[in-house]
Amino acid sequence: MYFSYFFFITLSYVIGAIPFGLLLSRGRGVNIREQGSKNIGATNVSRLLGKKLGFLTFLLDCAKGYCPMFFAGLLFSKSPDHHLLVALCGAAAVIGHMFPIYLGFKGGKGVATGLGVFLYVAPHTVLLSIAVFIVTVVTTGFVSLGSLLASAVILPCLYFFAEPNWKFFLASFIVAMIWIKHHENIGRLLKGKEKSFR
Image 1 (cartoon, rainbow, N blue to C red):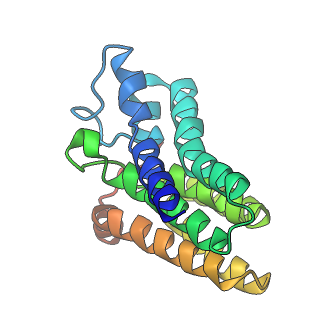
Image 2: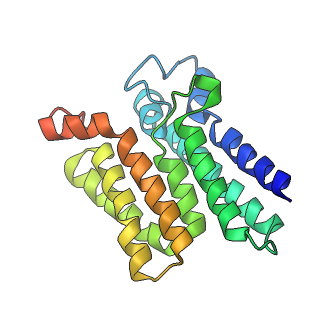
Image 3: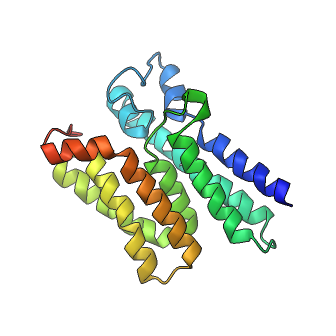
């Protein structure tokens, strides 16, 4: 049983580590790790290769967070450690995106993959999170600020809806990791030097 758990957690990391943005951009003859913000996420893909390819990257990165949790929950629904396994699979997928073994552990910032996790954990909270993201980006032009605020709003939503502790702890970990990975963006925002999406 525990070997199966370890296998699924490891598989979640491996799936999360797939750099879809990099693969899609290389298919167009562009290495996004050397251009733009040099990030492998959807925002940089959108800037360099257009919104359609950026949106496809976003969907695939989002699926990396959702699918491991979905299949772990489906296959181990009767396990006494069901929630723990699902949470660890979600966390592993996000860590995989942020620190992919294929790219020397230098990956993305985990926003889309984290969203996939949140879609599984509490889909009703994601609607408000997306609304916060859209309003922030439209009014300020800063995708990074929208991502930070959109991730942060998940926690009070989970508390308000009295979700189980395992969901709150998982979300807290992911939100903390997203903010840590955005430390350079936070610094630029505070200095007024962050690049606007406009």
